[in-house]
Image (cartoon, rainbow, N blue to C red; front, side):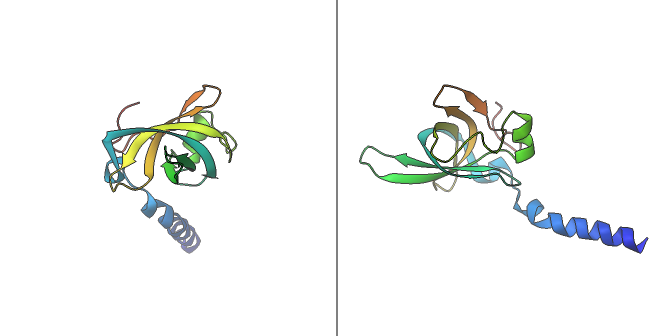
Length: 132
């Protein structure tokens, strides 16, 4: 009995950082601010609770800004046909999504459009996000 309680407690404690890191769409992103940004992938994080893609975007003056796009979790992305190699550093992509409420260079990605025209849903809906 003590062993099972210890195992359960251990599992709960190891999941605590992941659980506390999760948030709702509405807490961080603005559904009235759709964005579409094209640039070069600089980093891919295949982590829980959300995968992330970082993209360098160049404006008309040549200034480069790095954007942080939140996607669904890796398991959800796998179910949608993604793999950890679907997007690679150096890829040119367009990301459609919703801007962060705080005005930072962060957004919730809804779709990624690849150079060959493929468009893949990123799994980031629910928790207050607009319907796909």
